[in-house]
Image (cartoon, rainbow, N blue to C red; front, top):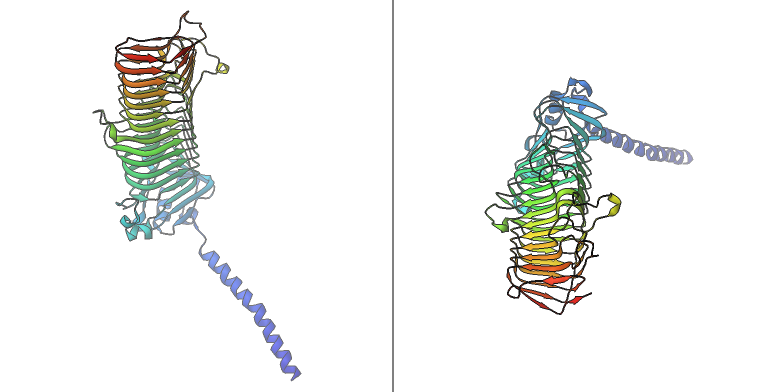
Length: 481
């Protein structure tokens, strides 16, 4: 009996010890089976000499999905075409140590999907969820070595995600065409490209987030939207600088050019956007709607909490509707800090327009700064702080505007008037503090009205006179000191 118990305990102990080992072996085998493929396994060399185009294309076409680019420099002479419906879900990863040398024309990587629906789940076909959702590119540097080389191009994609990517010396960094949905670009660098950093090119695109990225020294513009049908563009916490060429075409650090199509719903928040004052008609943010003055095609936008400086126009809106501008800091707007033309329903809120002497400029040959609004309607202008506008007729100019409310702003030390209303009607100027230190005139003009009608100026606190023709303006209850 005792021997039987001994045998029993021996077998039980062996079983207990054996089972974990079996599971451990299975786990090891499973882990080995699911290890991502390296492009080196398909013949790529990454030695900066071998043409790796065919090898990387084979790796993509294999359908393995997650492809690793070990440290190295991979030469491409043609685009790597990623047909998502054929190859299935794809993730290209370089862990920040792999470089792609694009020596041919076109994109280094072209993602092609078949999604023709919207962002609504009911419009997404099963093959898109099965094979195409969220194509990912992460941790690669792409260097353009051909005049027409592009970093990444995408069309027909659903949930394209681009993280930790650097594109430089290419034509464009990212080129989005035709139709895409739910794009994320995060923690990337688009630097010193000959064209545009991120280019939405006549694309039907809803839901695109561009966050925490540096977009600098791209001579055709930083982020550019041209034509197309775009909704829900979110640009946040980015540094966007010097994306204009003084010998190149007119563009902007952020350019929304909807002379055809429409661009509505979005925000530009928490960014530093600056530089290229010497470029022709340079702007940090520029919205251009339909040239036919159909203002409803561009707008429903928030521009908030940005730092904008060193351009001809820090903010330029034309043919726009439904835009709120608040919490921004403006300086060195060489023509104007803010220029708004032929626009409707604009809320210009609490913003700082200052001239910090630490930058070392004080004469009229430097930036004018200030606000000018032309031929626009339905305006709320409140809480502006405007200091030392030089070489301009006033700190705030409204010309040929109507239906406006200009209130509770502080306007200091401007060469001309504090506020100029020119051929403007049906509006109120109230509750403003306007002071000139007397350097420019013995009797400075706080508010000047030229032409127009049905203007009311009431309850302002000024150090200068209020000058207006009785048929154009009613002046009541102001205090001069």
